[in-house]
Each structure stands twice: as C-alpha cells, then as structure tokens.
Image 1 (cartoon, rainbow, N blue to C red):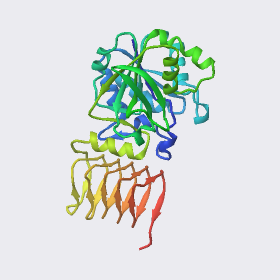
Image 2 (image 1 turned 60 degrees about the horizontal axis):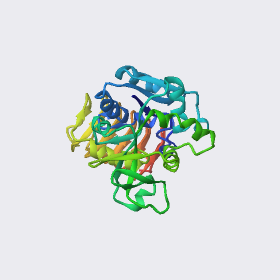
Image 3 (image 1 turned 90 degrees about the vertical axis):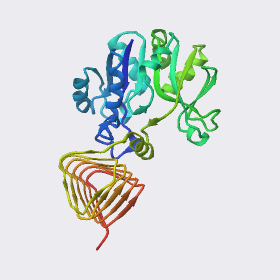
Image 4 (image 1 turned 180 degrees about the horizontal axis):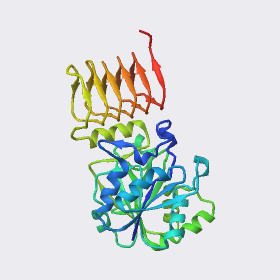
Length: 331
C-alpha cells in the first residue's frame, strides 16, 4: 500500500490568503496542516507521497525532505489547468504503479489514528466518515447513507441531504478500484472524489465506512480554519519577542520570533501572531495574523490578516484581509 496526500488544489475559497501559499501549509497552532497529517502518516512506516502542482512545488519540497516522502508534481500553474483529485490519482498510478492507496486530502485535520483506520480495511474501498450533526452544514460536503458499516448511497453536496454523516477526505482505494480510474475519466465524469464514489456504488463496488468522533476540519473556509485553531491550540508557544510591560497575553497563543507586542495590547486567547509582526495598543483574539503585519490602535476578532498588512484605528470582526493591504480610519 502507498500513501498519497492530495495537495494540488489552488484553494480559491480562501483567497487572497492562499493565492501565493498552499492551503496545506497554513499554520494551525505551532505547526502547519501538513505537519499534522505527515506525523500521522509517519506512524504507518509506509511509502508516502505528496501530490501537488508546479506552482506550489517549491513550498512542499522542504516538507518532503524533512519527512522523507516523495513529491508527485502535476505540470499546472493555474486553477483552470489543474487535473482535479481523480486526475491526480491517475497521474500517481501512472508514475508509481497500481497498488492499494491510502488517499488523504491535504487540507484535512482529523482526530483518528490512521493505524486504527487501516485496521478496519479488509480489501474493500474504505472511507472515513464523521457526523457533522447538522443537515444545513451537510450540504457543503459529500453525504453518506449507511446500512451498518456499508455505504448504500453517496450524495455530493446535496440540496436535500439524507443524513448528517459526511465523507472526510480519507480513503483506501484497493488496487482493483484504482484500475477503474481510467474508465471513469474516459467517460467524462466529474473530477472529484465524491462523484467517483457515487460512480463506484452505481457500478456495484462495495464501499465501507469507518466512523469516528471528536473532531474533523476541512479547512475550506475562514470559519473552519479558525475553529481548527481553537481546537488544536491547546498550549501557548511564544518565541523570542519584544513585549511591553503593559501588554497582556491570554493563553493559548502562538507568537512567532521577532514579533513586537507594544503598549497596552492584549493578545489572546486563540491568537496566532506571525514572525516580525508589530502589534501596538491593540486587542487580538480568535484570529490569525501572518508575518510582518503592523496593527496599531485596533481590535481584531475572529479575523485572518495576511502578511505585510498595515491596520490602524480599526475594529475588524469576521474579516479576511489579503496581503499588503493598508487599511486605516482617520484619527
């Protein structure tokens, strides 16, 4: 069996913060999303690969070297050129050969052990499913209908979900199913794993489900990203920083090297402050601030601010600010 981490998307739903940075490398606590996945993969001792695109190849190479995994690079530079998930699976088979594949979405944060997941694998297609507990939320995902642990129906982003169980982007596709990808794509089917699973069920392929609880986050929106931060940031990580004696830090927080926390600032809880940021007389909580951003006399709550921004005299709530932005209100 081979492990394939899918990180070839351009994450347009999180633009502008993912315009130049892959979603799998967004920080969550003191690590990035890919670190969490690769640490779980490392426990398996299996041959593993990251599937990405030419545009983001250089971003992933240091992680491939650090964790001793391979890179499979599709020759695309833009969203409209990308192969899609099933197309990327075909490329992996072409490059690595037919085998059983453990496939993991690279924007996925999940609580279960991959070893436990594979212990449930018996040679039939296996998918990890999570009860999201809300029919309205289920409309955003691939919805699974079960009979015991057997999948009897799969609805990709349905208008009327039949359950609140959703597929979480972790699959085992046996060798025989991987061999069917060519036929699926040749017939012009939609290039997404949910539609592939629907097609497999219609073709009479048995699909089983592994149910888990605790937490799962698909980092596809600012809300899910911030919720993941709140779940996974359990203790503070403060590096070499400059901090005013009048500033207050409320854990848990991450404050990276070179940051300056000046004046009567209040940081936290659940704040990520990137390298070389300057925060002065400002309150920041439930938010992610990327490197070299300057924030003065402002209140930031449940917001994501990209690198090298300047924010002055503002109150930002539930905001997403792109890199190099300069926003201020007059004194």
